[in-house]
Length: 320
Image (cartoon, rainbow, N blue to C red; front, side, top):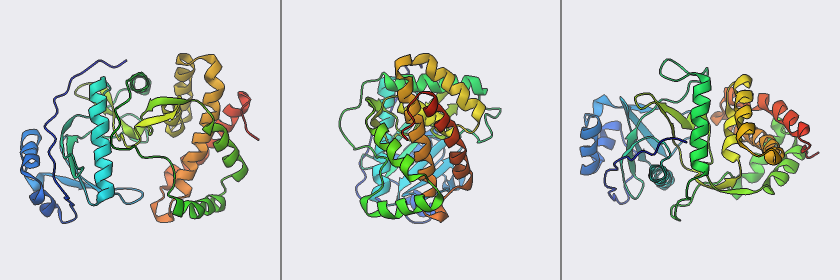
């Protein structure tokens, strides 16, 4: 379990109907005074010292600016404001429960801006000099997962995001999946079986290496991107993490850890969930519009499917 740490939060200030869509200079000029003061305290209010981060994949309703180890995110529309409210809620909850997360310096209650700690994600090729070795990283990630699973669920508030397409887009996405070669009978049979698995009262919801970042100065693994914080399948965070790890050897090492901390009578549930998450990971990639797809992520998702099928068969839960 990670150590219980107490982080000081700046007051949350309301900024009504703010939408940051202009140039970088305009965005910084439109920030409320409290946000500008926080920039000066934690980094620099000089707009030229910040750089805007691009985004791979689907367009986001949040713009991100980085300066040294600080990150400013601003919403461009109501969807972005909802995303930042979810992130603020998640970080505040994590801090209250002793779950390691990136430091939150301040945020608007209406979700128009968030200022916090900037941490680099794990490179696809694996840990770099500022990261621990793979074994240590997996151990740290497992400790964060355990801390989340044993925490008290947050009170009702901003609703979590869900892994479900808007109704209007489901037919189009299903067609893309069929054309991409997703085995439809296996998809639906696995989805139905996984939906009947026991639920957990609290889960991160998108627990994987790009959202498990290493804080080198404090030597800790921090969970970020709390958009899906809420109920979820039991062991869902553990399986999600497995399904997205870049290399087979690390997925096997992670599974060894999972088997060691979970009851043997639950392992067949984990194997079934692994098959569903492997299929869903393919769907995440091939059902998106072509211009939003990441070819490396798509290839990786397909490469994990045979492992998941083998796992499901070995535990007698292959649904076909």
